[in-house]
Length: 490
Image (tube, rainbow, N blue to C red):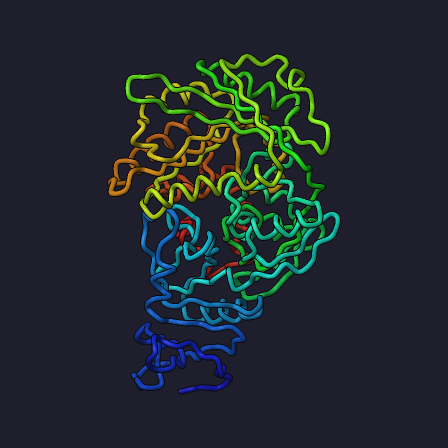
């Protein structure tokens, strides 16, 4: 048995024996107290820790969606990118899989915020992103942060210097590395693109165990394959992201519509002239037998003098209008109140079959007309259904796949069904809606729950960019070690 180079900080299993390596014959961990015959691959030296304790592994077995269980063999708490590189090399030698787990959230509610096992690594090694949680620098134009830092942590630090990330998700307690790996969409996507589009450079550990820096001018192919690339070419460990001056106040316009066509037309009017820096839309599912209503939430920013409300409402025809004035910070953290309410009502830990799609603008009316009658108040539960447009040209990374039109709509079905609801029918509905959407030219956003994605589905999703992804995979993760939960490369 070769114990050369074993770390003094070896992984532990519960309170029992020290694990000394991986038995490649039995495909089990080898401990000092169990001299099982077979070839033992020693655990590499680590500055962090690797654990096989059942409680830790269980904590990493489920994600926010609560629709899958993917229990890893072990969990790495890395101290650096070099720890991740060592574990990836170890995993390659022993035919194990590896995936980063954002462990996003607040308090004790920490978990991957993927929805359908995308960050899962059954029988592999899960990497705890929270162990990489340092904000390294904030300048007047950008911030350099570890991948496990949340957008809330960065926003708080930036606001202290009157700065803000330009693109934020509605819920801020998500890891920066996690959202930029899938894209990261929010209310300013029409102005700044995805969160991935605000990244200036990254540090990344490839599937071959190399630690590299990548940007638009350095290792550019890796940079563009990693951002919005679903974790298929590397584990992002650090990122430099843009910051912009933060406004003091947010003037929030809530526009309610009874007519779908008018709602969609006004959304595209606002998109075209860009009068609001923040714009979202929502479909309000009504009790059974009543037609849906629609809402635009548009936000104007200012510092001392509020803008003219009449000018901002010119050319719009909502059924009703409400205007609220609040601090920029209050609006930025608006989802925290919603999250706390959902937790108090017991919805947070229930299964959540979310569906996230990008529809071409030419097809959005048709799709909504067909899809909305299939969605009941019980399907939504305590959740919401977002629907708003953006310019596809604002997305600069080739693997952030959108419809081939200048304008697309996000259809984001964020269901929080009542606790104890069987999610199986919702998954069947998601698949049917996805099938119809793709017939209309839609693409999926990678965090949702769409069952039974086939290799043909993925090739259809990536279309002409499938070759780009496949080539990057062959170059940077040729043994397909990384992020198996997306099931892009089975």
